[in-house]
Image (cartoon, rainbow, N blue to C red; front, side, top):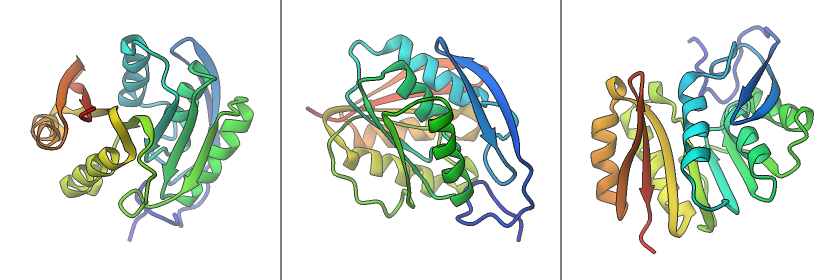
Length: 203
């Protein structure tokens, strides 16, 4: 059975690489490997999510959680933009998790931590001001909806979920689902077929 980027223990041969990029005014370098999501570059959806959030947020987040952090580009970017914010990333893929920890050190992002966890089983503390995710679309609709459910549980009252998803991969139905769970849902940005959705938990 071939590895997926959401596999717990990838068995594919290593293919270590690195790339540098600038996101939201932060210049960073990332180490990657085979068996992780978007190993050649920061994917468009993740970049759009970070840049839209940074552009739109009215206040600095103080506690931010990323569901499915991969090798860390979203969480580390936001940790660099918001150095006073405590950032946590959850990742199921052991290989991606180790890369994320290395990348946090390499980019001197001391306010971000990464935890090995299955998002669907994680028991959050319900005290995050913001949750962000570029969910694993290939894992299926039920998993993506479960990510939204976990985000709701992890958020404090008035907290915000920011999610990126392509229209052709289910953005409209995801918007409907979020409206069933959250108090307010906004389609904040659309670009090249990608939607940025913001869902606010009732205060």
